Length: 170
Image 1 (tube, rainbow, N blue to C red):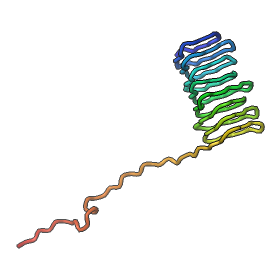
Image 2 (image 1 turned 90 degrees about the horizontal axis):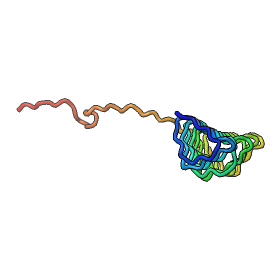
Image 3 (image 1 turned 120 degrees about the vertical axis):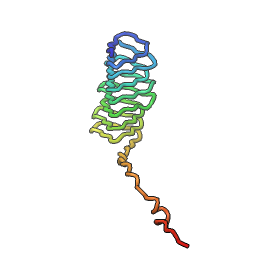
């Protein structure tokens, strides 16, 4: 459960249950980062990002790899382009994003947020001033189907005329 605090060039894949912080002078170019929470504070990251918690980006640039997390926040002042579809449970956009979003929960575009790409989510909120240039798809919440108890059927009800056997006497 090691935490990473990166403020230089870094090129080794990261796999930790801890947190990763990429600071202003940090440049991470690797295949993937696996962690709990990832925060990029004006640094650069080019990797696939798999986080069990939150990803918070205050940066500009292209992210070529996959992005999967619980919650994604693109902070004000950022300009991020995603080459692949973002997959998250919750997304908050406060700045410019180019790319598609697949969200199992809510996507919020604040008054300073804009998305150029398709958004699919359970719900989408757009504050006054927020912009969406792409399609908006709302996922339906499917009702849970409870498995019904198996019907108990007696063998005698399956065959008509099946009753107690009677002996005939000669």
